[in-house]
Length: 256
Image 1 (cartoon, rainbow, N blue to C red):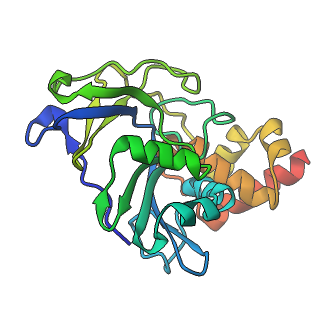
Image 2 (cartoon, helix red, strand yellow):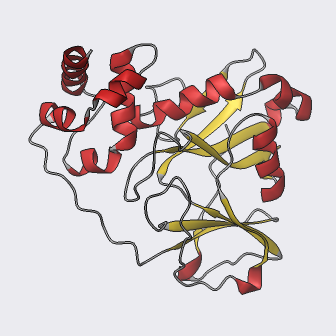
């Protein structure tokens, strides 16, 4: 599987974009990459372990599920030699920015490599749409690189976000990828959870349980991990543990 694209902090100097660029919101989440095997199997990982090792973290599993159910494999095969292709995106989850997770797609596509090279941002954006995956939201298209000053930016409010955005991603047509931060976004207040059971009891809602599909306990566990990742991590609570799953099972059983 091809490596993740190198991301440059544009504000720190160094290399810069060239020509015309696309500017995207960089939505909070876990970077993911995926390849479609010749047998139709979609292999997804987050770069932290090999695809054959432990599964991706619970917070990223809704994104993996979206990839495996929504991806139009026939359209992808018709467009490109799948053996030469790597898809990149983000498994959206809460870190510092509040989103409407009932509306925010679990996976947002960001980049595509073909034969090891990143394709242009407009081709990637259109490509994700053609294979029934949602591309990351574009803020500006065909922006001249020399107008993108390396300084903090204001990220416009989008419908699925409850506050100003934190970061933008810049992509030129020659493989350069970078980010700019919005320094005006404060660190969020974090709740204080005593343990996994306390966190689950505080975060599970009737509406979340009623929205569950398939294995309700696993679905709720993964959605809690996705929607509250930053808060759980700050409290030292790991959604992949047995204690967390048991707490979810108890809470789901109580509310059903």
